[in-house]
Length: 67
Image 1 (cartoon, rainbow, N blue to C red):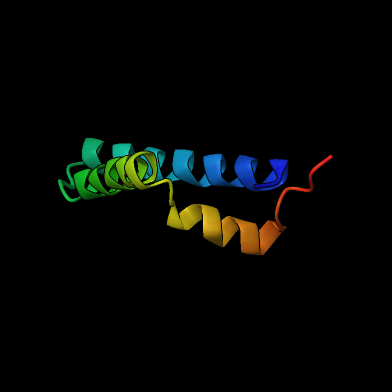
Image 2 (spheres, helix red, strand yellow):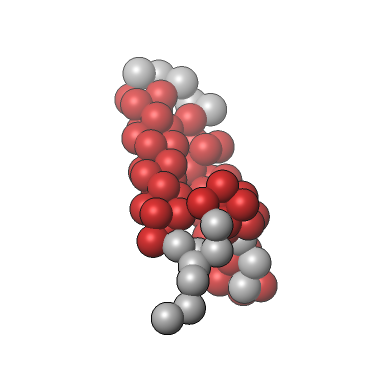
């Protein structure tokens, strides 16, 4: 992935975690499912080497150019 794709992916992941934490703190218990989803996707990526968000962000930002 390109550097900008990695940065965008981290920004989206951080934003989703922030939203989940806000939802949990204001009393919406379903915010925990956002956290569970992110954890599941991180483990999926670790064990299979495939992360769907990598594919999405590569399409949006282009693949990293080898130097």
